[in-house]
Length: 297
Image (tube, rainbow, N blue to C red):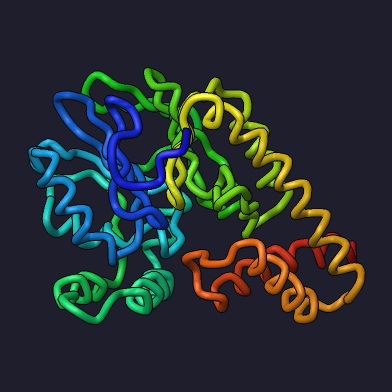
């Protein structure tokens, strides 16, 4: 079953934010954790959802960033200001990137571009920061707790160099963010932005975990048999995307022409996808550049 709108996924996991920009509230009874950093414009939705659920905000103790792309960091400045006690956790590579003013400026600019004009003054102010400070560095194999629940951290580079996944033991739930592929309609988008070899290796790594719930940070969560099968589907989608990239590049042997052709193909398959076409082109350009280097090696 797919859970596409904010609401319960399991008794311990709640989808919050919006369908295209999801974060998850994990209930450890004595404390809560938020997994994923979403986009800035979901902040009003998130705060309304937390209030409606009767959550004691003082019990929200940690926010885990799974990677440092702009669409997975937007709420972080706001919640850190609102909840100064919260621990922001991420990989060492993410911490390194987020210490750079140019990286954070780009994150803020892209979130601002997608921010509605009306009633967003306080959100715009939260985007005026220069760095995002990480309070806790997470590494492969680390085990962390949220009340009576436990997570294992998994390094899964390929979508980005800083990607991590969180595996919630008790729920057999995998929070893989974009490193696990992005469900969209009947498709899985293979988001191998950084390194296609690493991306495919990371999917195989995720497949080794017994998973019954797959939590994506775009377009919801999958439970039961769909949750169990999602990574297998993502592995198949990655192989097909790589073949498409390789055959398209072999045809044109030019990065710009290849990207132009790919944007048209992917846009037709993912009509209505939340990312602007320009950002989608940037993602496909990154993947094409990797394939071009392999082609010329």
